[in-house]
Image 1 (cartoon, rainbow, N blue to C red):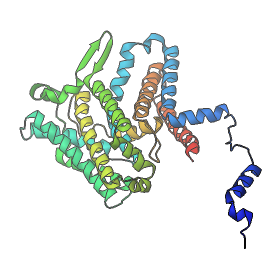
Image 2 (image 1 turned 180 degrees about the vertical axis):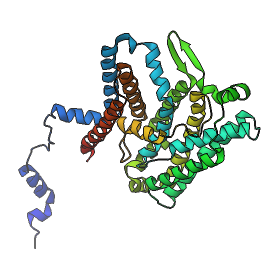
Image 3 (image 1 turned 135 degrees about the horizontal axis):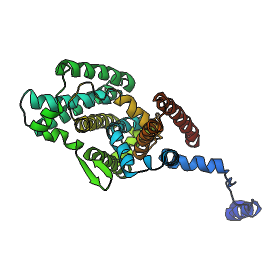
Image 4 (image 1 turned 135 degrees about the vertical axis):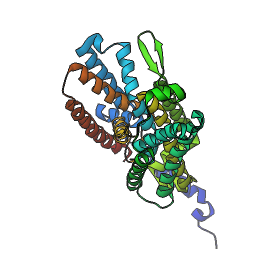
Amino acid sequence: MSEPQSAAHPHDEYEKVLSESSSQVASFDLHDKSLLQKCQHYLHSNPAAVPLIVLVFSVLVFGILLGSKFFSAFTLTLILQQVAIVGIVGAAQTLVILTAGIDLSVGAIMVLSSVVMGQFTFRYGLPPTLSIMCGFAVGAFCGWINGQLVARMKLPPFIVTLGMWQIVLATNFLYSANETIRSQDISQQAPILQFFGQNLRIGSAVFTYGVIGMVLLVALLWYVLNRTAWGRHVYAVGDDPDAAELAGVNVRRMLISVYTLSGLICAFAGWALIGRIGSVSPTAGQFANIESITAVVIGGLSLFGGRGSILGMLFGALIVGVFSLGLRLVGTDPQWTYLLIGVLIITAVAIDQWIRKVAG
């Protein structure tokens, strides 16, 4: 019995099917995006663009209103000096927020570290350089505790750092007995503690070493976050910790390292704080935690983690500095500064939600 022709030559059947199939090429929806959608995509891929635009606009506005009184090298570098501490603490806050956390204890850790540097020098007679190292160790230890509680015990970062803020603040006052170490004593016996208060003049521009330290720190962290595996892992953990774990990232170790580094940076801010105010005061920098969060939010970093740039944080800090000094020079009531900053915070969060729709 002979086989059917189609069974004997199956390739003929395939060719017949192919010849009768549709010859249309698959296409995707390539309709042109509206200008608004293009802006949304651009801002999503460049999170520091919005704060940079706001910063340039605010400088131009105050420059027009005040003229050379504001638009001078001395005034503009004065803004840098005023935001140096916030910029350094904001760098620590940025690392934590990129992992979808928050650190309310950064200000307290900064002040405790500065108190340790001063007390170890003047109470125990240790060499100032060794006292500074002890201050850094205290800051890193506080951050490490935060990291352990968040990463290993799975406690909410807000609750952990809120408790740490109270603990460190109380420890600071109890240990220092609420005593201030005077600027004159520091300049005579341990001038290295005031190192970041020294300045470098270029014409009428005045750059303190604290400003230079802040800029170098931000530049270093920008490189680390954008050019190293550790930095990519920070973004991955903040974006989706479960997916990061499946991709081979040790999420627990990453969180501990981020919080420890945050504490270390806060200790650096404590050293810069001594240079900024000249003395070691347990009551200084009490609002640094709020100011750092303000700089981060205005700087376009997402509080949900995984998106943002440390350059945006720096721009956010500068925006606050420009508004504060500009409104003061205009002669307005200081409360207008808080009002405008509050509007900026809410606007920044609203813009972040609008931009996140692209990713969604």
